[in-house]
Length: 348
Ligand SMILES: *Cc1c(COP(=O)(O)O)cnc(C)c1O
Image (cartoon, rainbow, N blue to C red; front, side, top):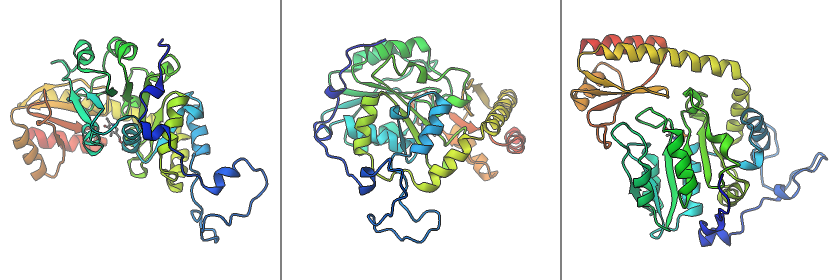
């Protein structure tokens, strides 16, 4: 539990005074009568997408709410989680004044977004076994530290951080703790969603790009206190989630059995891949993974990467990330793709 957390203290001053864009349709929201819409200069002839999409994505949020057990007023949806992450910067981080903390090796977008938004990026490396160094993170923060990004399960290492370390940070970090759960559906660990009410400084980001198989539609989700979501709603582009995305997302979220089946297949293939990778002569380490990818340490990552490219297989070379010297990250594919990959990698 954490009490007395004042969100207005973290807010950028321009955002505090901002008057959001309103469409005429915001004003007649909830009208039960069939309305005639002559307000937005749309083409009136129906083709399925001739009207602007619902800026608050009401129907989609209700489906998500049932699935995740979170109130719709504690959710914000975006054009991929990358947009959601950018909105957090724009709401809370004053350029050239505030800072964020990331814990490399981790997802590359946090640093990129800090650069775009002109925010100081403080880096506190993970320990050698890819765990959080809580004391060092606490020592790196000051009164201008607004966001702490924790990716769990972590990309590219694949492990989830210990619950105890995350709890300590939630209890003592001065700014918002953003937990990126892009891979949570592959993990045996529980989501932090259940802790939303206990921690007013907790922000959880999820996506439909990975386990849900919808990278092409771009839908990211942000879960946080109603106070935080109200702020983010003020600055989001009004029509950031298009109509086709809202429809496809709703359909897919209702196909629970199909999604669960695909996830269980991928987890089984991941275990097969893990065992096979251990047998490859130039693979020095295979890291255990809570996600749908495996990080391996090899003799010469750029060289092996190039050999795989020449054989028609693209993996990710993560060698330039701290603590990841000579590592490659391999996404779990279909059974046939994985078998082909293993056959090829054993011939190198
Ligand atoms: C893939 C990934 C995302 C997804 O981003 P989208 O913009 O939703 O596709 C977010 N965070 C992490 C850590 C990822 O690996």
